[in-house]
Length: 112
Ligand code: 5GP
Ligand code: ZN
Image (cartoon, rainbow, N blue to C red; front, side, top):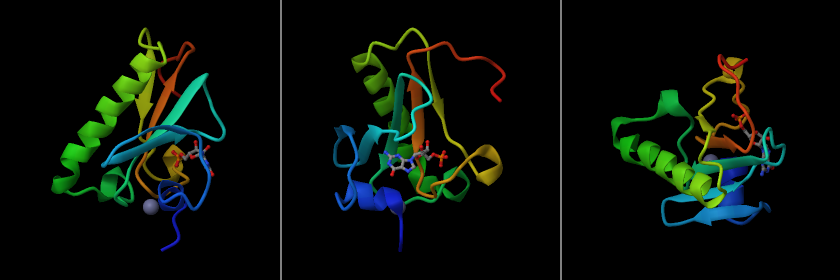
């Protein structure tokens, strides 16, 4: 299987690592949309939210707790956003589940 994020997690492709443990790998987005733009990725290949199974519930929650930790470490806790893009119409371009953490600027609502 050809997967960019599996390659990054395995060290076959370079990335600027932010955090890792036995379950997740987090790294800087290559095209940041905010001063903090980190991708938090489960080590296990899950395609996206709509393909997630009940047994993925814990890792999906854990991705958010890692986002909160990174936001704390980066001092962007006064306002940040976590996003799953699901499907091409929502902007998903990499089909290995990843949580975007965006922070360090003002975000508008509703999003575009
Ligand atoms: P999506 O569009 O699927 O929600 O998010 C994929 C993200 O991966 C995009 O924000 C894109 O900039 C980022 N990205 C794509 N290729 C690479 C890469 O090779 N390295 C890193 N660090 N980020 C990437
Ligand atoms: Zn993958």
